[in-house]
Image 1 (cartoon, rainbow, N blue to C red):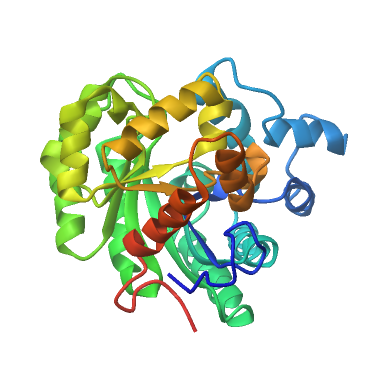
Image 2 (image 1 turned 30 degrees about the vertical axis):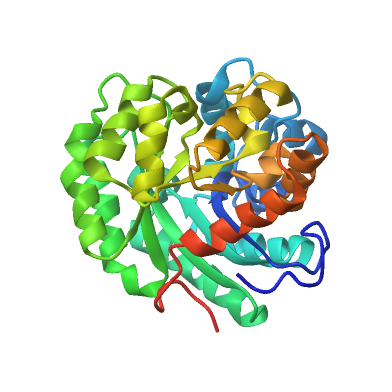
Length: 342
């Protein structure tokens, strides 16, 4: 991690790392508005402020992640469904995060198949456009290191997800640093079908992170930790319910990508009091934790706001927050020349 000798981590010039950012939740609403009009997308409203409410979370979701996925990400992913839109999105995310929060290490994730309009757009063009946007950003901001994580989806067939993985292999040496799987719980989805795929990804040098343990039943996360042994887990806060599982995470050095404001907005923690209990249980069990934004524009947050909230609410001390940010630099997938940097 770059030196933080300049003082408290809340200060603007202290370098930060964000490992869990979804493209669908990270683009400013005003930019999304312009992109939608440039592409001639018919929106459900012609009023910008109504659109703003459409693509951001202005109050806690009552329907949890499934509702947000259907009502929020549906629109952001649709608007981002072109090569030009994705290039602009990635370039804007990286540059904006650096200017506003001095995020010098940034991992960004997205599902390319959710941006090709059901096969109308070519996946390779979508992926190449994101790489191009990332290349432009790191040239303009030489302090920034960046990498892309391609996401599979629980609602997709194995065949569809396999195509995404093969595209990741194709562009592995062009800034694709990892593989993830996400999406609401789905009746037909079986994690066991993906064990060999994720193990192969690890053998080939990809970072592997899996969305699990945010909602649903804890046994999926237990299965993931026991059989796949990913490098990191997206969210994973349900692990606080099991001493055995927390011990496994500690022993295997599997870091959790924790997203506080997202946890509150989605409703997986009821309030800050419950958040403190959950996070402190994980911390006291010495589970490796990192703090991230998830989708800063959609959730109305920034990485510094996340740390400020955690400190002001007494969830973590300033010294512990320093350690949390150090963890992010330690467990990043942007290592050994992969990712993009000047």
